[in-house]
Image (tube, rainbow, N blue to C red):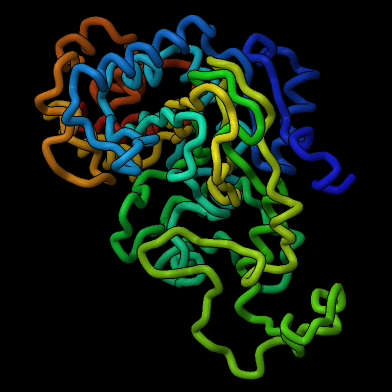
Length: 417
């Protein structure tokens, strides 16, 4: 069935309480691998999620110096260390959900690669509280993690992630192979808001009941095919342009050919920015039909999308209540991610923005910010480890040797060796 007909039904869902159910897990896995987007229902209770939203709103009221954008009617708040965010990232259910999701990746190219998907790491991102009628916070179809870097030898080429695509074997491209992503440099141009950690999934935890069209997420659930298309698009050109009123014939293979002379044009890719996609540059994706809304969500649901997924945000929030989320990706334990944790840990102690975000005082003077002492005394040990605040146990029995070596290396990087 075509994406247009399936719509939100193309996105797999699973209840958090069913993560142990083999049959449901298998069905979820197969659909996730195909489409790259998912919803885990009820990772935390609605009461907890709504409580975090109320706590965040109080934190913002008590600290009117908090920055946000758009400036006149903020939807995204430049907060990283509010009580709501720290408590959500530290929740045992969320950490379990992240490990479950990342277990769907594999390291077939290098089975000795230093990576552990069983030990999530914490990335301090922002939060969104978008009000009804808002049209200021609108993001068109794009892919995060750089743009030009995907074609560059010293960017994504360092891991050969897309070699199958560039060699003409796009059907064999595996977006779920992780070891090839470890050496990647996704930010060669110091892009604003670029992510330095390896995020297997971008994601957010819902703090509101939100339906399609109510200021929420849209995704392109074609994953591997969409990736192959926008990576190969620069090598092709139409014989006759859309201005010639060819109708449907414009998209037919007979109207396209390899460029006679290769140019440096990378449609939608600008150094230091995300990869942008639109109908003019990428007509065969038919974005007007293949960008679908995520299903309706309730407070406590966790929405994730593969790091190569084309995604967007509703141009207008057409709902009647706020659309609120905590941005929380799923990141494995790797050497690069452990190195980032050392810098992010420093930012936490100082109350400043994370290393990937604009510098400044941040929350250093915010009333109600959780202190490091509070976190060390009240947050569970796995969450402390995920934040880089406590030593990983590399002596535990029954784990693969590769994971043990990764834990030991992370302890060395974090100063716990």
